[in-house]
Image (tube, rainbow, N blue to C red; front, side, top):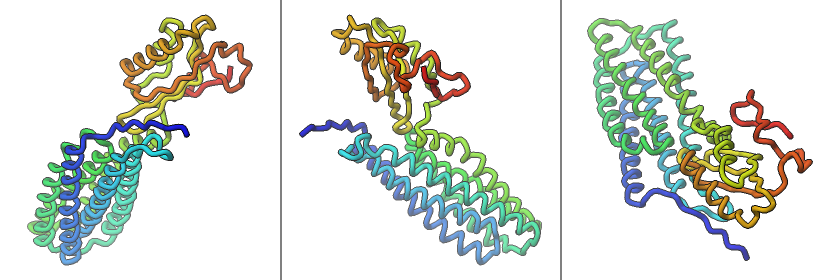
Length: 323
């Protein structure tokens, strides 16, 4: 029986446990904020407060998803998940961001309805609850900030919290205006502003997660440069059938066919080590799979063989044309 050796690239246990403790604390805080804002929104009649509660509930869900995804991401690779579970964090980030966009669109609809039919609001309750929510959001953001730099999944949850903290500032100011100036239109205006803010900040991260899930070429990698660097190495005649994608936000994979001269067969292992070292140093590509051939692409007569030099410039992702 063949034995498959899987590589584990997970974080150290102690930092991972510290990160998870911070996530659990953040989930508890957000549940409290959500309950307080639902009660406060109903009692005061404030749509902005209920919108903030809905946003906070999505924060709680996103943090829960982040926690589950983080634990999955640390699991060892298995015989049926040979790359491991790293992409669980990307899926978690995708779910978080899609949820955020849907909530933002719902809030826009509600805000428009409030413009058409304004309603009286209890500014004192709105102000008090929003201030408590703001304090809890700031505390949650401080808890998540250290981990947001290392994980797209945690960064998406952190974005939830930051946008909610900003919206809480708006709701506090709105409560002051309603309490002291009876300006009730500020409530739907705040809701609209919060929603647009969410959509704006979600766009780039959502595009990044979709690119990873669709196995797109990372933005920082130029396929033409990859080919040029490899083909400049000693004994390498040609590189074709090139595929580059991200396993997760930290690990990039590459597979390609390498053509050597027939007289260089004995040097294949040396060439392979040199190529892998070059790809790691120049492009930070960690996982490389190379297939060696000794017949140039244009002599094979194989429609699945692709010439590196015939990559279509109209396709920046590196789609190639048959030779």
